[in-house]
Image (cartoon, rainbow, N blue to C red; front, side, top):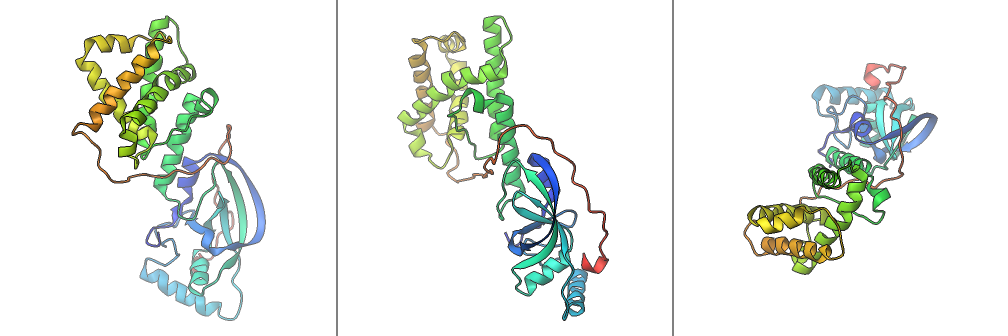
Length: 305
């Protein structure tokens, strides 16, 4: 993490929901929670070590200038419990160099939909955004409150959304009326997701690939099921029948079990590395508006920035 650049504030505000903005005022903040910048992310690493020779010279000059007097407060945005420097990058760097734990700062707070942790990176923010969009589009929390659907990679949410959209189209054609995506999600969860997880568990696929998530294994098995349907016209006709009844559930589970078994006994197995890209945990649900991030009106002296 130390070699990483500072996290740009725009990455946070573009991938998470901003629920509000308020001026907090002057306060003492922990230096180890300052992880980002408004507009100078490439000039310093996560530990605020300078990346250019001229910046190091400026930092040395700042140390001399404030050898016997306190430095003025820096200006920061707080987002998700972490801080992003607007004005005062060199002062933070100097404080870190001197082993300081806290620094005075003028704080403007951005209330976000998720809390952040000091090691957060852009990939984690992207993953969080895709997970949020998937839940919002499908209304998963409302139609299946107990559902926990996670993927190792953010693209999994996009691919699963396409599966559910195809399911909605099939239901609409069969019923002769438009089926909303949320209603299709409810049907898909009961008639596809749950039978699939049952089959994946019983086939031993989950145990064999416990480094993957349920979502990963579902998509993988779904793709194999589509291959089997393409070569089995009778099964394809039965699978395409959208009418749900008690007799159909065992058939669906059996079809998923066949697909899971074909994977476990086949050669098209996934690489055995754990490629998970973590996401942030929701802090709250609901709709929110995201005000643009404004640069502070006060312009700092160049040497102090």
